[in-house]
Length: 109
Ligand SMILES: Nc1ncnc2c1ncn2[C@@H]1O[C@H](COP(=O)(O)OP(=O)(O)OP(=O)(O)O)[C@@H](O)[C@H]1O
Ligand SMILES: [Mg+2]
Image 1 (cartoon, protein in one colour):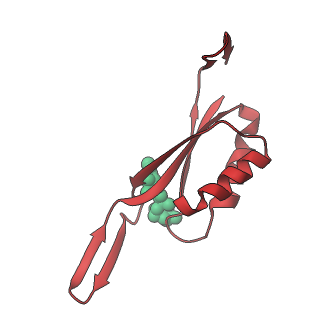
Image 2 (cartoon, rainbow, N blue to C red):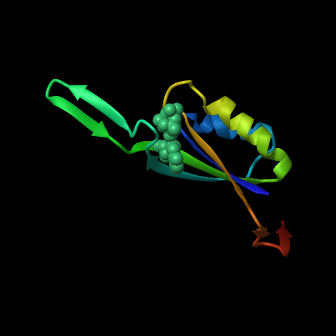
Image 3 (cartoon, rainbow, N blue to C red):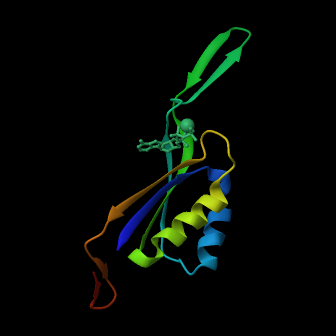
């Protein structure tokens, strides 16, 4: 199993969730976060000078999936979240040792 962590634009969240539902991915954790990437935020130039916003609002999606679903999930998130402009986000993949359902005696991994 792998945990896929995707940081995306908030306005793309519904689109990504719908895309994941279409490929049978239902379980996920969604957190509203702030962060910065390579550009270290945004610089605004006004008449009174420049100011920097170095924490931009993003949404973090965490979903744990079987290894054979990883590429499909990445492709779906990418397809639904991409605008082609800086700030589209990042996807990270991590190994997961076990997944335990609390309701029943059920362990995967
Ligand atoms: N190296 C990183 N580690 C952890 N989180 C990151 C990293 N890079 C980006 N992020 C997260 O992803 C969000 C979006 O990053 P962003 O899309 O700007 O990445 P980027 O590498 O600058 O790519 P781009 O050039 O397309 O903007 C950030 O606000 C931050 O939350
Ligand atoms: Mg960036």
